Length: 520
Ligand code: MSP
Image (cartoon, rainbow, N blue to C red; front, side, top):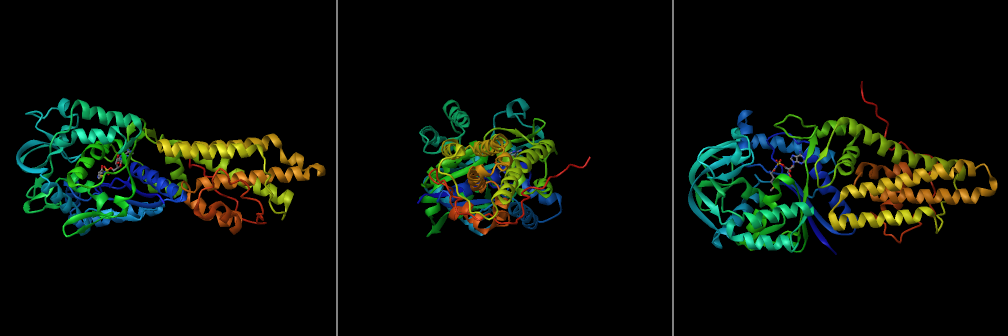
């Protein structure tokens, strides 16, 4: 049995969730469901990054105490996760006692191993990214910092430092030998190049409590709280490890699992450089995989709160349904590159792929069966021109995920199969066969093959379209749905003839996706 742990990054709750957050959740949820359908034991977690200056300031701006503010935000994020059918086992919160204890235990382990040291510190701090920029210039200079100067503040204080620089060779090794494998390859190359050309610098990992009260206290020093990234990265251990007598004991979901972190490109280096170094310092096992997605853009610009060009995921779901948004995020955006979201494209993809392609195929074929075969049981022919297409699609899907975690390709393959089925109907013209009684067996055999293809398509759509999957009993009848679910497993390439013996229900709801017209 393969054990897998899948995580998304934990989101800052200082604003409402946007489409970028939805993308990360949906990608990770696809993988969690996909691997479960392969028979793997999956632990899947999402959560919120609740400490730091930004969150503290967002609460202040609303006149709320920080805990009250984040409790309210947490409900908003959880509600979106539920609406999107994110099948997470755990929702981590960094303000929880369990998490704080783990952050302190990791700190202590790094300190005991000699990797944490107190130093006097003067530097520029990027409030937006919660990132120390170092003392690279005496005066703030946009050319040096590459960020909006309104976000940069000077700080001067005593801080604890993590000796990150000592880990450059080891981190380079785990990245280049793929024991911590970064997807896509071009991101790996960027991350490796940085290590080879610049190397890692020691980083400040605490702030004076008088300046930032909203954080995890540094063990043994009440005057300091942890730098938000040091605290945040530990979230991956909070529910997968235990603390026994002050020591961190990895549970099976950390020690024996293929751990995959799903994150966006802006935070790849925190996960590829700092996180493995922290784990090495604390003497803990490393994750196995890092999947880096791109950004959702609107007219070429990154979608973000500060630009005010964000789209509310709940608005899209209210209009088209969660399945439609999931389909867009997985099929219309390149899995690991930037991609555009526009309302027009959403409408077009919903109508073409879901209403016309998928919805029509299912209702057309089931209706033809009802009309021409009545209550005859389905008998799938051993050989059908569609069989090789189904086998090919299945193999392509397996290798797209195994080799590149390429979810868009899964959608592409499903679309190819849908197209092939729809074209074949136009070519064979079953309604013409139906006019010739001598061709009755041929007609039934042909339609049986199509029903078989439909069950395979629906089987593969399970990790993408959970609402449709849950409605299958109403659409195909209990027996039809059971055949698709296949005991919660994907079909293997050898499984052909799944539909044989199926009694297609005489009546059912065949409107998979309602046609939606945009208001003028
Ligand atoms: N709290 C940190 C992560 C800590 S993980 C130990 C953080 N939070 S965030 O809310 O700013 O971003 C969360 C995730 O959303 C990141 O992976 C980020 O890349 C992703 N996205 C934010 N905007 C995005 C888009 N416009 N498009 C796609 N994803 C983007 O960073």
